[in-house]
Length: 299
Image (cartoon, rainbow, N blue to C red):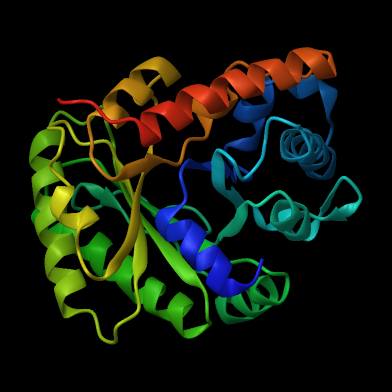
């Protein structure tokens, strides 16, 4: 797919974005969920090899195609690897799936109720390499734990600054200021984030568009104005710890927002499954998440 084809699919494609970007800190948990215990590997290389095998199995499954999967977010090592004998971004292109890459390097300690992104050394070089491999966009994550306006404003400022750097490199950023769904101040944090994002988007230089990856709001429909904002290509939602049925039910209440699920996509997959069992389980998850992304209901 050429860039303009990917842009059109990202903006209007029916389906959802698969988040296959677990990194160092979250990889052991993802492997355990997949049925691989920590004693199955003895170092990081073996661990990353096992998670890459899991991702390759997903990407090459007959159930994983552009008919229902609009895009896939990759970890850097996955982007550089192969699936089905092809470079992973090419394998995704061939299936009609738009590739993105996770670029953040984890989170700072909490301050003002939020966790900003750590510095991202070598970002320009990574963006250039990703562009050369046919990657369309990026994803970068911060976390909001409390309804602290100063903290949330700092998160949005940092997200937009990185997003502009990504746009300058010819890629489309997914800004991800995640609100912790277990926050005791979740509804208030949702509202402050809406206000701060709207101000930042209104003031953003240029005319290019960004994508937003947000926690599902406590009040359905709260982010309708972001879905309609002229500087937003698309709004996607993370599952945030909800199990898949609940995440899909909440997603269906929010107009114009599609899923970008990780745990909720992978939760029933196991290393020990036969290929037929694996493909059937993955297909069922894809169907359910697609339905919540495409078929909306009144809140």
